[in-house]
Every structure is written in structure tokens, then in C-alpha cells.
Length: 489
Ligand code: NAD
Image (cartoon, rainbow, N blue to C red; front, side, top):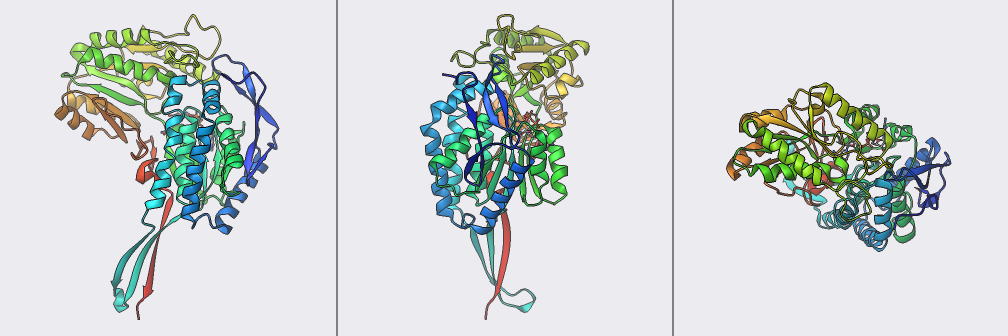
């Protein structure tokens, strides 16, 4: 099912045309085998310049910003076109991202494709103008109208871990709101974005310049997009360090930034929860997709007097996790994306030991997988929340178990983090609700509730980000507000 080695190459999409990159091509690697899959067009500074110019012209000179019915039609057409090629997209998502195939039936592919309906429907039903009636400020009778309008050119910069979800959750609402877009995907997963570009060019009525896609091996091409004064808004998902650099670059031309950044989220078990079952859930939750989810709960907070039982339950479940070929439907934990990420995670595992931690399971490479960027699902015990492995984002299948002394202390430990992306709490409904209300995070799962859906806002507090993606709040992030007053005679 996966594409054969080196038999595929992809293009940039600039001004409606599929084109080669000025930098030639670069290899895309299968993280499960370390073999090259093929190549992608390597966009350079000139390509990015042309893409921004095309998006600017499409915004300033076409009807796209004002023609809501065209935009709604194009988004639904794109959703249907992606669905006609869903098996090809599934194959490249497994091969290029290393995502377990089961996830492509959900959040890795199918759900975000189908969720394009949400921004389309929102735009269709949206109140673009609100009449505030007549009043006479300073004695001048005035009819007041508040109008919502698109920002202009949106620069979208995305990471590799959930490429379709993140690409589509940016371009869907940005385009539905009437903006034009330049998408710069991560160098590790160019095909997921490039195939989107091909499908846009070949199978939709999206006008030239409205969506441009520049794959590149060079992070500086992303930095160029963030600083270009012709771009009005930058929507970035990635690490907090890069997000901060994007914010600095955007500040030079005072453009709006939306940031979806890192996390170190807590999974809190209260003393009236079913500890064994819940700790097993926590372990499997962080092993999915090799722990490469920004909102995954990588700190497990358990009652101190049940600490040993909790570590044992988490480790027992973690040892049952199937690690291996992402194309195998029984696999839960595939490879991490790259040698760089594998080595970074291995560095954190060494650090855990240096800090006095103990591996209840894992801690190395899976012995049965000599090739591929694999890490053993790992449970770390014996540390406090001051340890670096409890504070820093590891982005691997690694769970750190910490002790708490009651509900209030669990909240304090959970909030004692530079991040504030997500959280989970299990316990009696009233107490769990009390904890949820005090977590300084953007999304909370109470007793297994699912917060992810097209109509729910997603985003972070503190250093996990600025603004919201998805839901009505995510749509409105891409809108300006204009107040118009007309004298009444
Ligand atoms: P990254 O920050 O290294 O890169 C993200 C993107 O930014 C890539 O496209 C990269 O080419 C580009 N980039 C790099 N330097 C840049 C610069 N100076 N200016 C502009 N663009 C630049 O992140 P990553 O390693 O690709 O992804 C993993 C990170 O993403 C993790 O920290 C994870 O938590 C975060 N993430 C957050 C969310 C969320 O919604 N909060 C979702 C997924 C991933």
C-alpha cells in the first residue's frame, strides 16, 4: 500500500500552477524503515516571494473575499475531492508521517477532511453584518453597522505530527472567512501538503492565488513568510521556541499571530477513581502515535498512597502496547518522525536516570525493530514535578508518574508548568468538575469526555499558544471587525 521507494515526486502550488522548486528537490523519508520514499519540490526564497505575491493579488483583486457562496462551494468541493483520493492520502500518511493506519480513519486524516464542512457551513450561515440601529453620538444621528471582513493574506506554518489535521484546520476557516493563504508545511512531511496542492489545482474551482503551498527543506522559507509585510496574519503550529521566533518576526510589520504551541499536559487521578483502569488508559494514551501529540497527557498525577500501584498499572498497560509497522492495523505506537527526534527523546531518557528516575518499563529501543526511528514506550517513576523530564516537552511515548496529596495539590502540580494546553481528570463528578474548573489549560477531558470536534475551540493558555483553532472562535480569528456609521438625514 505504501508508495514504492523513490518513485514519486511532488510540486509546489503557486498562483494556481503546479511548479518545480527553485531549490530543486529534497528527499522524504519513511520513518519506519529509514528509506527514502521519493522527493518533494524544494521551494526557495524566490518561490515564497511569488507565493505571497499571488496570495496578495488574489486577495486585493479578485472577488474571493466577498463571494461567500463561491468559497462555500470550493470548500465542499475540496472536501469531496480529498475523499475521492483518500486511499492515496492514507498511504502517504502512513509512509511519510509513520502514523498508525488506524489513526488515519480518525484524527490523522478522515475526520479533518470531513470537518471542512464546518467552516463552509459557518461561512454560509454567518452574520457578516450587524445593524446596531440609529443613535446620535455628539448630536449627529448615525446608523451604525458592524461588518466582519477577512484579514487578507494568511501565512500558515505547520508541523509534521498531524499534517492533514493541522493544514486543513488552518486553510479551511482562513479561506471560508475570505482570506487567501500561503501554506508552508514541515520539511519532514511535504507530501501530505503537496498532494493537497495537486488536488486543489486539478479538482477544484479554487481560484489561482487563493491557496499557495510551498514545501521546502529550509526553515528560513518559513521565517520569510512570517516576516513578509504583505502577509496580514500568521497562523503557526509548532514548538514554543519557534512560535516565539515567529511572533518576533511578525511584530516588525505588526501582523496578527495565532500560535498553537507545545504542551506538558497532566492526567490527574483522584482518590475515588478506579486507579488500575485509569492508569492503564493514561499509559496507552501517551503511546499512541509514539507520543507525538501536542495535547497528549505526559504527566500522570496519582494519589501518593497509591503511587506504587499506579506505576505498576501504567507499566503493565504500556508493555502491552503494540509497537511496530504503522501499516499494521494492530500497531498503536509507530516510529517517531526522524533520527533527530529519536535522539532527542533518547537524551531525555538518559536525563531521567541522571535526575534519579526509574524506568518501570521501556527506556530504550525496541529490540525487535533494528531499523526505523523507534522508541520503547516508557514509564518513569521516582521523580517530582521539578525534574526536567516532568517540565519539558519530550514528544515521545514517555509517561512520567508523579504523586499528589489531594485534589488541590493535584491542581497546583498540574498548573506548575510553563505550558497550558490540555488536561484530563478522573474522579467523582463533582470533585473532577472542581479540578477541571481550576486547570489553566485550553481543553479538559473529564472522565473520558472527548473535547476534539469541529465545533469545539482548541488552543492553549500560557506558553502553549495564543488564539483558538476550530469552532466558531477559530473561524472568527480570521476576521477583522469594521465599524461603519452613516449619517441619517
Ligand atoms: P517546529 O517548531 O520545529 O516547526 C514547525 C514549523 O515551523 C515547520 O514548518 C518549520 O519548518 C517551521 N519553522 C522553523 N523555524 C522557523 C522560523 N524561524 N520561522 C518560521 N517558521 C519556522 O515544530 P515541529 O518539530 O515541526 O513540531 C513539533 C512541535 O509542534 C511540538 O512542540 C508540538 O507540541 C507542537 N505542536 C503543537 C500543536 C498545537 O496545536 N498546540 C499541534 C501539533 C504540534
